[in-house]
Length: 298
Length: 135
Image (cartoon, rainbow over all chains, first blue to last red; front, side, top):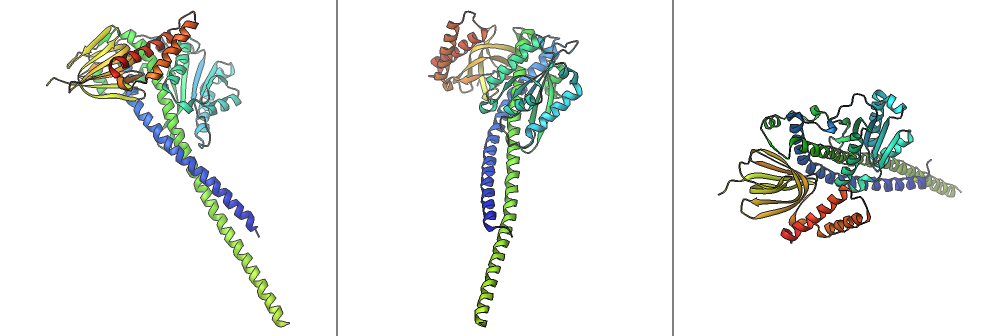
């Protein structure tokens, strides 16, 4: 028979855990709301930058070093957006596995010859890829503690410079896209060189405005040169915001699960506790009764 | 009643302004210029400077803008900037600190990096716009 005190101790420890996971879920929910708001705030700016860039690129046969299509791919860079904290289910691992698979399938030789570098944003990404002997060129642990647009601009600035100086011929961005609170989409996409087709959108209105003759000040080329880096900045920023919101969503779901499990376990234990308690009482009573019987007989 | 057009100021941190205006003066890269109703379609780069919007009831609104772009077509104008604040909402202390920091760094170094000079310019612009129209 299970010891009553042991069961009681287990119940109280599970109760404590349940309270913690519940609190973490609430915190994640609050952070998620904020993250979603930031995502929403960024959207009009991102859409407009993309629209202008798309018109300029498709419009006048303009050129920019960021559109450069190398004949041969020498070096490849992956920008990985993970999270800083754990306890968010398979949020990080799922993404990292997709990245590893992509590398295995398309860039295995680059990895072997040391022509594949990673830039990791978030502690978890750094830990994962360093442990697996990837060449992590730069990492930004603690990035999400203070999510700031200008920080993203700085990271992208280095990447753009490296690309323009031909240190890299291809840059990929990998992150979790926020689909809903409970589901994320893992995205690995090429961001450099910029492909004009990737800018174009199916929106009819944009196509219409593309046919209007615009005045460009100072000139279309000049504007494009300044605009494309900003387009990339906002692309990274959007990915960061998406990932941030996804992370909170994933944590919320994971913590909700943990709380449910704790509840189930607690119920089970309570049943066991009551059974044990009852059988203890039964034994006691039968002992008293048989004791009384023995006295009477005597 | 003067004709108005739609204006918005967009940044990665959200919309700073959205509404109907009579005129918009922006710091274009080829000099400051003003747009009114039915302005020809234009895309222009912006310098660090001040944006002035004339709202439909005639009150002017001022913004400090740290470079970017302006686009206007079909009586819809968008200012795209990585950082833009309304004059009254400028964080003067922060701008002053940024200015001090930039000046100090520039004094220390022999070569004058472009980024630092731009940082200084942005801080000075914020202070200037605040002094003229925010205080």
